[in-house]
Image (cartoon, rainbow, N blue to C red; front, side, top):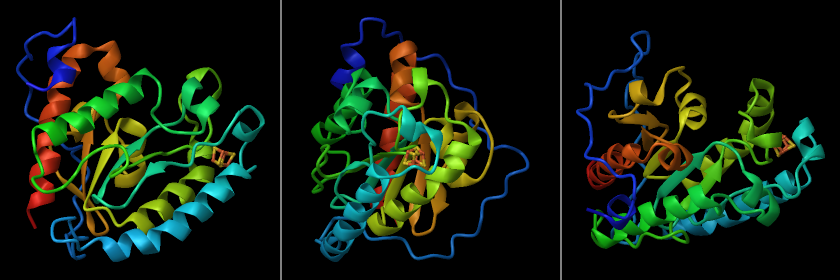
Length: 243
Ligand code: SF4
């Protein structure tokens, strides 16, 4: 059992999980696009090199952005961190207070948990031969600026900001995208639903496989969610390793 689950004081054995369901009116698109490459065999070097100027440009644009009113209350924009090297991208919701101060995503308590999850994947060698840590994956949010009082993102804010994350994903060409929470999943899948209805299934976003799991902040509030998150990370690894 990885440390981030075992060390949780409130850990309880997982309750039986209901069979995952996709929203009934959602039809998966056909998988016509070729999968982006994995990091096994050094097939991502060109993607890494090509992504750097795009990621830098998105960061510069976000830092200067005034497309929505969140620019008035932010301390720093939070463009994203990491690398295209592993081909794994985690997409969260929006910066919190710690992220707003530092300009880096997932650096508060939820960020520490995400870091432990990534390290747990590495320690368990879920993807043999691929190094996994914060520098090797890419971590990004749907919104680049903190909503006041950590409220949920508003639809017009997502509409204004989402071109940035889309451009980042196009440059990163991830093998697998892991949506952390409802807002990332709804944006990238174009569907509405609860996390429990969307997780447990593999989707596609262009040449990436996509899975959905709970946001680390939810795991802090509900520690029993750590077990299904670990199940989802194992699914991520399996999907990464298969065409
Ligand atoms: S949240 Fe996004 S769209 Fe709004 S000001 Fe920040 S970077 Fe611009």
